[in-house]
Length: 606
Image (tube, rainbow, N blue to C red):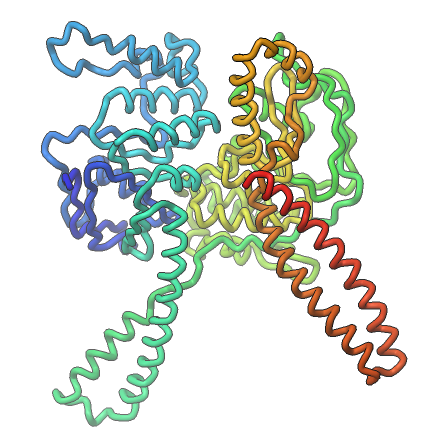
């Protein structure tokens, strides 16, 4: 293997806080490595060290001589007056290469990245457009090794999938930080986790890493239990034998202090505790009646009608600029429709998590003061309230961090603080606009679990496909020109259907009846559900739960029938058992029917 980069005994700290200590690993030609860690454990600092933007305490960072490294920053720097074409155009490969035309290559790449006007100044581009131009610049430089810091942030899903496929196909050496789990799973062949000042390396994709990490945590827990048991024994000896602490017993004393150090390992989850209950939500949520909205010739909605149901969870997808954010502002009443209206239920309490909300904090305030301005006490549920400080601790803000000024918080800390201020009001209808940016994978998993069991409604705009698959029941697909389709399923099912339709469309174009076929089906955008459906993440989990439920109900019915035929029950017990048998049979029929529905979908696509 050709070594590209060697990191040896690298240590970095800020004051008395150590991020990582004596970490050692190598990057070799063809490696595709994903780095994962909780926010604050040093991912971005680590990349800044590798790219020479930040110093370190001790150790060595050694690149292969002559290695060309391309670095994509989270927020790439650029001159606002420079055009996209000027920014992306690479320098010549060789000084005297008359055939070289970097501008043509850049123009082609920018077209592929959907930059319609390469002459547009960088300062006038959206965040997503600027990120795409920066990505084009890095790829066109043809580096030997790519270092990418959150490459999927601010990209729409189509661009994420393009980049995912590109990096999967290319024999490129890659080191990246990303929270996009599908991206990690498809692209990476190795996962490195920074945890408790150390690194743990796993040769495999993200799915393999999750399984091995779970095993590691179980092993650490078992080992820690043994250490603490042994420590108790040594502590008893230390207390019992003060007169024995001569040179003869020195090894026992040294052993005791070593055990003390090992026993201090923190195996707590260090995860955000999202246990805030929603407010009661009535049967009437809200209705849209003939809502239309346009900006000049650009139509966002055209005569849109919809009635939201209780506990409905919907994802919003579509190209950047299709009107997703405008749609959200219309629903929340932050923008008025051109025609039509919304009828909102009286019990609806909105919780809005927006991109703009991140900038609404007064940076001169301390974290605790900003939260206390909203509420001194936070209701967790009908029986539990906590102080503002205790509530912040559930979002991983220590007493020391709560005294920090907001201006000094990291991007991930701001996200957590913002999420806390949204949830502390106990909303029952959450509207989330790109909630996954800058949140670490562990916090994302907790947020997903919270939303999956949330007793209210959810609308979420996200480019995180894993997040959408776990949360939503269906999608609003913004097709452009005011066309919004309601797709019955999660994002992966939607992409599967779109791919099948595209495949059939290409096949039909080869036949003479292609035009007639298209005319006959023009009014039906989606194929029938049962022709392209795959089980979603939630449905697969539902099948597993149904199997357990059917087994449990079957056992309960057999036990009740045995009791009824035993002759040992009194009259009241016979009535109760007979009533319960009827309930169990009804529940069993319902569970088996649903299981068969899911099984039929699975069989059709197997």
